[in-house]
Structures are given as structure tokens and as C-alpha cells.
Image: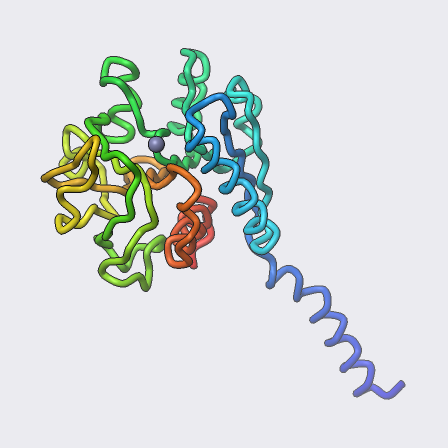
Length: 253
Ligand code: ZN
């Protein structure tokens, strides 16, 4: 073999070894909590969300696991994951809640959907009220599509989004106090006022209604979407869900 050929071969080997390293995406592990004993529309959402994120995990090369056992919300289990997801339910015992608080206060990531942000009152879990920056106040009924304003099209999770889009039918929540005014909260999506009044049995009529936000003191994102079988009908909105998880997983796009 000539000296030149030896050099070419050596370079080729170098490239073969280096390519997977340079091409590698930063690995991360996600654990999604869900329940099958809650409101049927919330079960339906979880049943669609799980295959959606499983397919995404295969495409984007991260681990996505699920559990119905909320007692998995403990320090040992959580230590294996960079992001936990609450697919339309929330922890109910003091031990589960304390484990989640410790996890978040030590760099854990959280993606909460819809009723994940619900509380009957601040006194139910004061730490969570500060974490999410507000308390549930009201809702519309029945679920309806809505025009949504994108507050920051430069944020990684909404990068390149139009200033507004139509979101598929969802049960929309209002909040008190306004999370936008809470310490550390950065709102990313808001219910456009042109939707008012929205609902028939229960109606949202006025006010500032943020739908998606992050508390910049934590690695977290809450979004109000998550009621029923229509949530994944919007390609654009689906890309927001994907961006949100990649952002929390430490992969910026
Ligand atoms: Zn709901």
C-alpha cells in the first residue's frame, strides 16, 4: 500500500470513529406519569400523547418511559430521569409531592399538561402554587377550538411560530392571580381576547388568560392543552409539544 493510500485509509477510519460522536444527540430520559382512572377525556389525551412521544423518542433518540404508578414519584426513580411529564394527572400524597419538589429544586425538568396545573386552592399545595405561579380559577365548557397568541416567537419552544394560530378543541382554564404577573414566570402563549365569550355551560368572558408558560427559576413548562382526542390534530401545535420536550431535555433546536 502506498504512503498516500495508507494516509487515506487512516483518515477514513478516523472519520468512521468520529462520525457517531459528532452526530450523537445528547441523550436524555423522560418518565411520563398518567392515570386511567381520571376523567375520560383526560385518559383519552394521555392515550394519544403516549404514542406521540414514543414515536418522537424513536426519531429524536431519547428514552421515553411511562408509569401509572404515581408512587414512582420518589427520589430513587426520579434520579434516572432528566424530565418528568404529567399527562393529565398530578401527585396526590405528601411523599409524592415532596419528592417532586426536591427533584425540581435540584435541576429536574417538568412538562405539565392541562389538569397537571390544577389545584382547588393555594392551600392544597403552596409550593406548587409558587412553582406554577398561580392557581386554577375557571374553565370553559364544552371544549372548543381557540385562537392562540404566541407571545415570544423567538423562544426555543415557539421559534418560527406565527403571531397566532388556531388550536384544536380544548377545555381552556383561567387563573388567579394572573401568572404573567408572578415572579419568574415567562408566558409563551395566551388565549386571544377575540375568543371571548368562549363556552356555553361554562364561559370565559374576559381578562388575560395565559395558556403556556415557564417559571424561569426552574426547568419547567406548563401548557393548558390536554383535554380530549383533538389536541394532536394541529401539526403546528404538535411541533410546539416536540420543541418543549427537546428544550427541557437540553436539546436546543
Ligand atoms: Zn379537562
